[in-house]
Length: 114
Length: 114
Image (cartoon, rainbow over all chains, first blue to last red; front, side, top):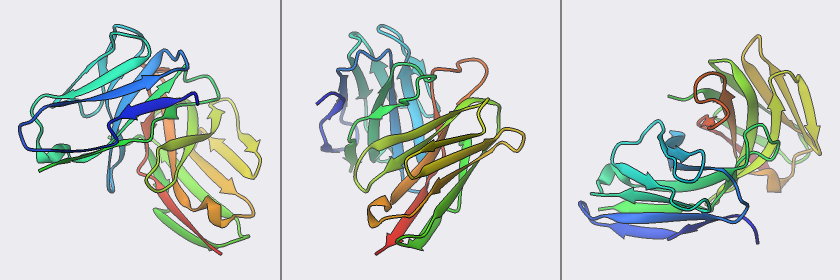
């Protein structure tokens, strides 16, 4: 099925470890996004990309890095994980915000940092 | 910072009743969107309303937008138990960086009792 695929779905990290979350979309969308969702906080934008080779900071970028080397993939990296990064991470993609279809979201990655 | 703020935070109704959820935002927008999130899943796009539109319908959903009050409402008619979910409004703000990212509210938890 067409859509946004996130890997892994679950991960437990120790403080200081690093990891990369992968997001892949097969809809030829230009825009891709990484959000984190915490209880009572809604979704907050970490980083986003408006096209292959571009990235930009969102609302809460500290402690994260991203890369968009291929149009279909958007990687989110944690260089040195901290307990404050325990969250559910969602990737999304869109062709254009004026298009009525809106964002397509992945199913999320639940990350726990101990 | 949250652009959209939903109200109420939680809503419990009986199956068959209508559910009304409200969203207020702070800055001028290009469009406003509503999303649904079932427990443990990603968000699903429901409907988009542009700043020059006042009302839109999609099945049992009715969305209104009042740009003078910077507010929107989502009405779900004849609710069903399957409508139990969290609902988020999201805004595409005008200005620098617009048409490239959405800002989400904290969400409304809707419970529909059978």
